[in-house]
View 1 (cartoon, rainbow, N blue to C red):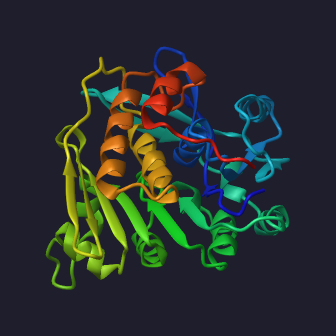
View 2 (view 1 turned 90 degrees about the vertical axis):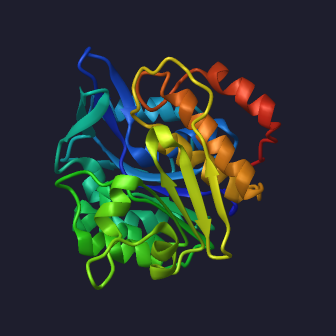
View 3 (view 1 turned 180 degrees about the horizontal axis):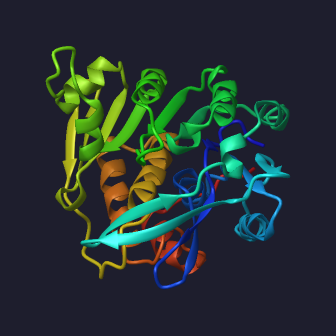
Length: 302
């Protein structure tokens, strides 16, 4: 495995929709899936159950050309699942607890990484709800990756403020939405931190704040401020996974040293395309082909 490939850590699961459809999901899995389509060949580190849905995930990853070396199997816990519902067009999530991804094993992670290092490490917050998976993440973080990209993804009640602040202080880049900024961005006096203050508080290289229909903005430690409006309109099916699509392109831009303004615009455009799909992942390579052609992406060799 090339040392330049990003490592993506966290949950993989099936999203179950009200119409009975199931779609592969989990924020880290979504990010890894898109990066694979864009030629980054990430190392995805997670855990599935020894069950039919776990087998489906392995098959889907194999068919998509993904590296399965970091995917563990749990003999007792089931593969993750989430029931998705919608309120005023916005998704709500009922997340099953004590799933396989809650027990990502640190020793197995270390064994799977003997031929690789994480120069860029991405993770969210849901998989850190259990001490077992939290310890596995620390196993990766102790190697001090060049870039640690944290995508906050708060899911009530599955987060603790102290743990989120801890992971923010380890990060180089952070992405969150405006609601998460309000929840986490308070100063010692209880006042709200502006994004630039939030960036300084956690000593970040970069901070991305997504603002839904208002687009997104990016702040850097060099004092840069960039803003992008929503991408071209598509018929919205649902917004599940839009933020993960955004993160995948931010990572792609960082890995390929794109100008930040270009990276931000492409991230917003891709997120806007994903809302026209049911669920967070698309298994048709033709969906990605015009994007790849437009961006003139060169695939990396293993």
